[in-house]
Length: 137
Image 1: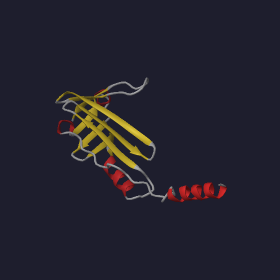
Image 2: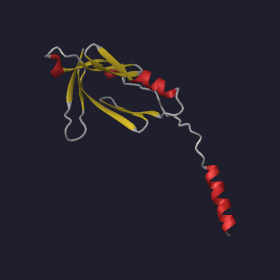
Image 3: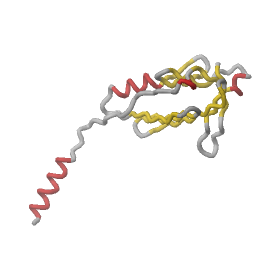
Image 4: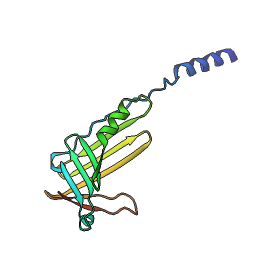
């Protein structure tokens, strides 16, 4: 009986062996047409501080002063690496764009709602985060 149990456990361990590769899922970013463009934080723009987002046809970039950090390049880098996991999940409507970008076990979530053609609100999540108004540049 012990030999049968040992043989079963050995077979189970061999069949569950990790290959060392982690497959990424969806890596494309597809912002809706209504949000595409550059959006700047309205409050900070009064102090000549340029912070916000740029939504491209296939990318989401964060703008900090004169620099821009885009997710498409990061996702491309991660997709070429079999050890690191990356994933993008989007929810799109005519007035709401939500995107979750995951690298390994860390997910960054963004939720944007259309106010009108020239204003969007980034919805805050959690107790200490407030909604932020952005204007089209």
